Image (cartoon, rainbow, N blue to C red):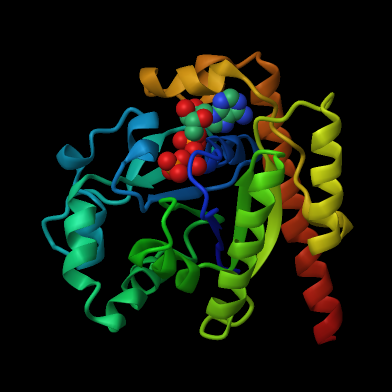
Length: 266
Ligand SMILES: Nc1ncnc2c1ncn2[C@@H]1O[C@H](COP(=O)(O)OP(=O)(O)OP(=O)(O)O)[C@@H](O)[C@H]1O
Ligand SMILES: [Mg+2]
């Protein structure tokens, strides 16, 4: 059985894509999952959040170019369970994007590069930049599902709807690609406004679309400056618990999905 390939994406910036990709990846280790995390953003926030210096280790550019001297990529960055592995990013990724963007065949490079790791990992998680550019499109073509992190704000619904349209367009080239889950971030359950946003999301995608929400917590903003996940920086915090619940729900949804496919096939 191959890895689940999940891209964390929302065309809106600053919604919690990176924080969620990093902490969901780390949370999956508690459930004995082997996880590969791909930093596809030249801002390299995922890489920095894990305390890794991209250039020293070889980076996404050398990974995509398949360079022999690319070093030990993917890099093992956490030991818990079966381990968390990272392909780090660096600013050089933006030059690479410009270089290859003229050749549409380049869009399938990422898919080809990760196919070698599909049997080894349980999850391949991709963090994407906020723009819908070359790397995000490459991720959509390589992934099996999209998780959309978003704050429960009215204006974020527009970006969610746009992300859905883009997903449907790319699904013509990558059949089966779908928005599997929406993850509410910066969550405060006491806000009446959040409840109406939830209703809208369910209208758009059905009752089961939401992962357990991640509350608003300054701990999440502090942890990256120490190169730590929330499980290292504030292991007893409620928000660490939130991310474990998200990981558990993702695993459960995959297992449910698997049963359904088997039933349909039999
Ligand atoms: N649940 C939360 N509570 C409080 N702060 C949060 C939460 N989620 C994310 N943040 C903070 O909000 C900021 C933006 O989060 P993050 O970098 O994950 O967003 P992003 O969608 O990846 O941004 P970009 O579009 O720039 O890649 C960061 O400082 C992060 O620490
Ligand atoms: Mg980000």
